[in-house]
Image 1: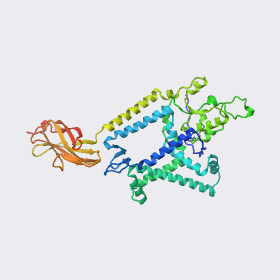
Image 2: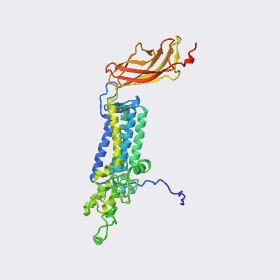
Image 3: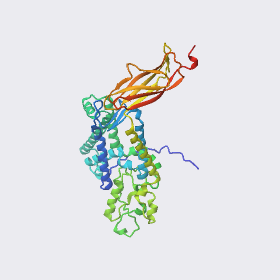
Image 4: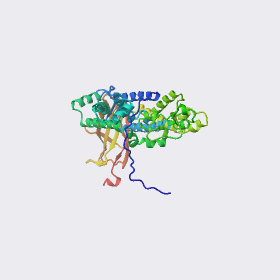
Length: 480
């Protein structure tokens, strides 16, 4: 086998050629309008939903409290030691992508990906200001004059306003939205808030306005990963070449010609936001937005041909339809071993997380024993071990707690700075204290002894327990 040296003049990057998609109407375009409206509404409005969290926290339904390392989602509160729930959500998101891709191809990319949604919004603004495809092409090709400058400036200004709103909405998830809004306009917000808004404004403006399809082709890894998720049974946007070829203009003079249903009108290319021709087969750039289906169905209806020349199909459909067999039912296409496995895994993680969330305690206890020194010999011969304890009160009001312990050793306990083993933890706060366990004077404990540390909520009688141990000198180190 011979190898060919790469051509040094060949570039792996193609300069962007502006794409001006034509407006189209149809089922999938309507679906995209609804999804775009719902997703944008969720993104922009969620930080403003109020939720009573008591006097200690902002009344915000969804809040990422980085200062206290907590996450709030309506009635759910995630503390730092409960990060497993965040990890579970990320795993569910990954499995969800695998599930939808194996069943319906790049449906995420075509309908709900943020890059797709904001690009669609920017194209809508562009079409509203500059006109449909032909008008935008003419404007792009003509030289600069007052009209072109006015249209471009107006378009860029609206894009910039959308980008600012996008960056602003994002930072509202990390602080009380009304308070941060006031601070942003009065110049009292922290620098990181302004920096975040600036970076997100710039990226939204550039990615949605000028890079568009290049983000999907060159920056996003998912088009390259999706091939492992798809097989010949995956439903995706495709062209029925066995029905459409050979393509050609259907005129009276060639009415008897052996032509397929495709009239080579290029309507599918004109509406594609990626600028590809779906008739060339599956391509990395295709996001399966299905706008080409709407365009082709409209043309087929006008020329009196059956709809579905471009459709959601599988690679198996060619063999099935060419031999005239009945198509595979949609349910059987989706319910396959791979998709069922993904769904079972996704559901199991989701159900497990929900059960765990509703069964978790409202208090949390962590105990860390001192590592240096591991023990201290007091002047009276007693052995003392030090521990750092952290008690988290996840309730909306202050609670009183009492600490106790259990061990086979005769030990006494003391919390530094407190006369008794009772203490209070403020609402939605974590309190850190120093605990000392001490043997009786001149006792000779074993080198290592198990200890159970308990706390009890005096209001709810809820309890939490942590196992630790007590260290003492080795028998040969006690001296005479």
